[in-house]
Each structure stands twice: as C-alpha cells, then as structure tokens.
Amino acid sequence: MHTEHQRCAEACYQCAAACEHCALSCLQEKNIDMMRECIKLDVQCAALCRLAGQFMALESKHLLSLCRICVDVCKACAEECSKHQLQHCQQCAKRCRVCAEACLQMTA
Image (tube, rainbow, N blue to C red; front, top):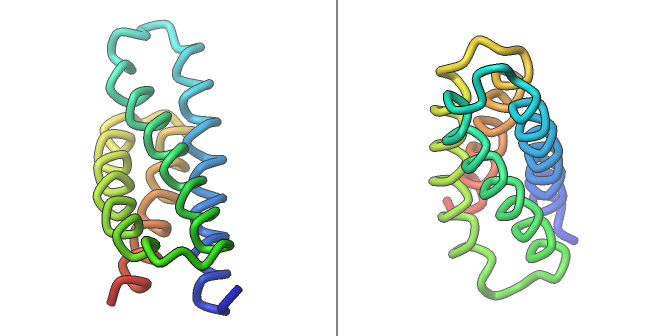
C-alpha cells in the first residue's frame, strides 16, 4: 500500500472505531430521541470509512470517488456529533474531522 494510502486508511479505521463507539454510547443515553441523527450518521460514517480503508488496501481505481463521499459523510457526522457535549460525541467529531482531512488530501 502506498504511504499516503496507509496514513489515510489508518485515519479511516480510527474514525470508524470512534463512530461505532459513539453510536453504542448514544444508545445508552437517557434521551435517545435526541441522539437519533447522531446514531444514524455514526453508523453510516463507520461503514463508509471501513470501506474506504478496504479500497485503499486493494488499490481500487474507484478509491478517489469513494474518498470524496467519505469527506462529505465525515464532515456531516462531525457536525452532528459536535452538537452534543458528551465526551464520546466530541471524540467522534474529532476523528471524523481528521479522517475528512486525510481523505481530502487523497483527492487533491
């Protein structure tokens, strides 16, 4: 795997793990109705980031297209998670921003 792909793949996998942790933690919150959009975006972002990591490992010719989508979804997830002051949401937002930046650099 190319060095730049390796860095981005690591950011994607770390983001996916943070999103999965956030979604699980959100399910434990008292006001789960308030967390619905966060959970949805966490699950979507985690799935997409894992797929992007796979595409990098496979050196797919469709990688750049997927990275562009990953940037959008990571930004949306970061924005939603940022609305909540919960530690798991703030950590997830941070990882999503790092991943979005790494994927953006891949597409440049």
